[in-house]
Length: 448
Image 1 (cartoon, one colour):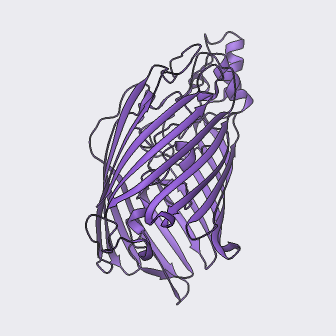
Image 2 (cartoon, rainbow, N blue to C red; image 1 turned 135 degrees about the horizontal axis):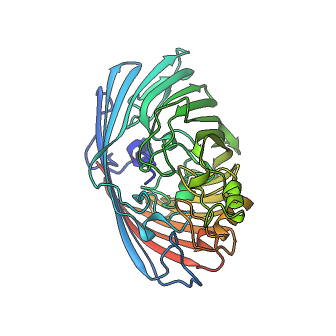
Image 3 (cartoon, rainbow, N blue to C red; image 1 turned 30 degrees about the horizontal axis):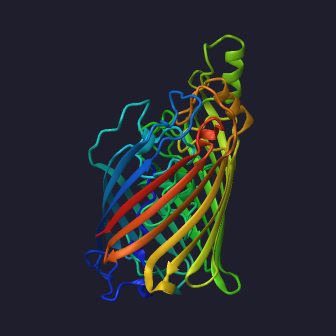
């Protein structure tokens, strides 16, 4: 499972509220020193039979199947001083999703609880976030802020430095945009809500320990995070030896009236992961030389390997109700995919429309297309029968994994939402010999 943090309903704009002023089941104070809220997200998905010339250990099952995932989160925060806040969130997640989160690079449900080498994680509550936030004001002028589970102030210094330290999810703060970053009220696919080529540091559930430093000015921000890597690919345990394994993440953001007087933002992301990772080319060479019975990425893991990459994220409001977003990502595909998903290059285009035109201002419809790819070494490794932590059909007739996703999210009452979702995946797992796969889905979301 890879978390996308609190839903956007937690920080809905006042003009987007319901007639009684609420977008949550229970009202939240705008002045209290503490914060308590919660949300529940339930996703049901299904796919019919689809054609497949062969199957491997990590293939999406071609027979029709359905699955349901559940995520419940309790958010708490406390304002220690007017510049220091502390947050602690407890979460419960269950359900492996269709295919138990293997066989696709763009997994169709971001709430999937992944297995570790086929072993399910315990279905027990766990600590999701525990972090301290400290604000250093650099100006006397204040700007409005959305009070919510990640920040308690209704206003902030226009120029400031923010420090966060503890346990958190990198995608709460990096690679965010207005149209494709929230699996609870927007899209569901892993590579639509996040940049698939960003192999961001996280354990199996999507969280890491780290330190984040951010500088904010009127129209731009720069943020940097140093975070822990998992001990093994897709591992639940983080490596606390920062001299041996660590991740650097740097993002610059420019925002303002970028196009025709409408608000927008451009973000450029760079990252470098250092960990006990494998090398696809080395695994291929070992196999061809007869040193291993099949390509084995695990056998090539060496301490100190580096995986690095870049991303661009753009979102733009076209009207008050209509917006678009674009993502692009690339990483050095020779180093093993280790923490998020098996994508080395990605490009994405999406759009969203709010329901004012049909008198449903809190409803939203969205459509996105994402095309994922892997490097030559990565695809050859899979073609020869190698296994990644998500992919492995025992062969590979390579083609880009192209995904269309659409949704309609309907506001039912206060903090109650429902959604229809449909996804079409061409060449699942980059394999032209399998698919396409059609995945309809339903989502129920509650904001407390």
